[in-house]
Image (cartoon, rainbow, N blue to C red):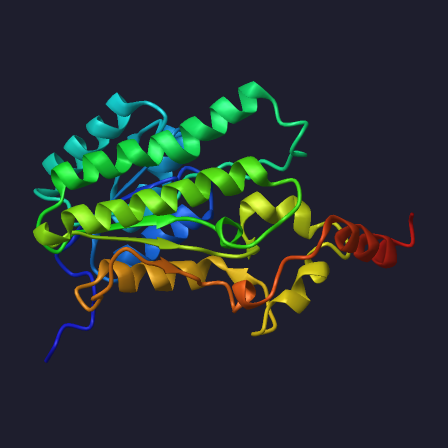
Length: 266
């Protein structure tokens, strides 16, 4: 009887799993459920160790903005699991700031986190993964379509998507795949505050042909396929966002109007 677990025998790294119930943890749990051994990484060791114990995995602190941390993470995972087959970068900073108000310090921080850090991550991955390896970058629909007050976030995510294409092009001959996943607005701990604002999430719904906001499980399911041997795709940006990129996000004014309508407060 064929093994139904899609990731049996694989060792995976999921960076960005230090937030309880965040997207990184959801991906890591799905990987473990599919038979993978998983190293979860991020900046909060206590939470990483707590979560790793629930999936039979391992925990390692890693600041993606520090190349030495990223290199050490991959070395740790290889030593722990014997090899590394899948590398997922689920880190990010949802900076919302007006274009002319964005500071030099904020630009430096988001470039370190969302461009230089993922570049280091991909470098370490191609130095570590073997044939059939998969690199997965969690991107954003806003790397393709517009959203007000999000330029620094959007620009760095889009730049990293192009790096993923470069990796796919250069290292495909070694059997390494590299792809992005682009969620739209997704119910995660990072967006919990926004969801609590009456009318805010509702203002986005008309942009989704499939009629609902995305979930962490939607993204985890896509990541399982990209990590599996069934995947014959590389250099692509998988738009797991219910068709959002066929339409658009609401404007700043439309969001404000929806909140006013829901709260009755101008």
